[in-house]
Image 1 (cartoon, rainbow, N blue to C red):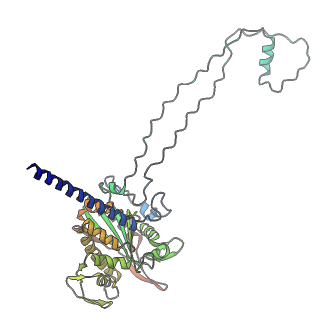
Image 2 (cartoon, rainbow, N blue to C red; image 1 turned 120 degrees about the vertical axis):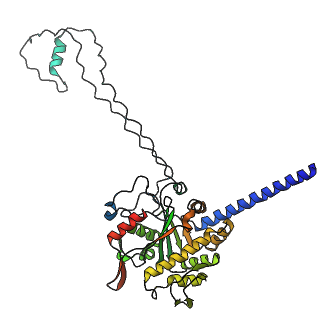
Length: 409
């Protein structure tokens, strides 16, 4: 009996050791892939670049309520706060001029002759010198120490500034989290223009995910470039400049950024086995035909479905809604993957995906904001299309930018 018990215990220990080894290797694989896709975007941290979040149209708005703090986003302070500057040492008051000890005033002795004596050059008090010379030798007087005023009460010590919360810690607060998804229109990262600009706002209080697609033709002013379409920022400065431009437009800092190429978008959909969409009308593009009703699409089909614009009665706004539909379906598929399956997807996207998310942050976000698939709302940017010069632009008034700011803030 004991032999069987010992054999069973040894088997359990061996199984536990194998499980621990498998978990360790899985964690190590996830970390390795995370290093491949991780990227610190230029401009992360403090201080803010001038003009990013200080547009006067947002400064004029009322401050947020104290129970809904605004997230600092990617503009975080250093992990270890700098030591506070030493308080200036109190300056001792100037020494008090002491009068000589009280003595009988010396008798005045008339001068022996009226010979004029020139005053000494370095004597601060000629009268005191003549008096001291004519007076009898007094006993040495020990000067009384100066009577200083009592020291002022020390200022209360200022407690050191609390260390800034990490992104993972902020997930457990009442702060909203803003994530910017940038999808370019080329097979490789860093090329072309931004074809998708989608802001995901996670609200832990309302337990709701908001999706805001910014039309790529939105007219903005880019420092050094003048009026341009908002997606041109990607061509001029990649994902970093594109992120700053979106932040200027909304007056809201982004917490995280995900950059994916056109090829990566297609590969991600194929990696999860496709997405399900519901076309509202019939149309064809790139050899693919779509009919009203539920359709399951592979990567290339989903790209055609999400990119069509000219046949849509709503133009770019209708295309934005189809992009959101594809992304929501893709998010749902990714949320159902195990760690091993998620690692395989990331390995497939190593060359076409960059983000300042770490693998542990993604896991924590999915755990603390599990409502993201069930409670969603779509936010539309209100504006008008107009031809200016040779270009077609989507004009968004300042009042609409203020509305979006307050809605997402």
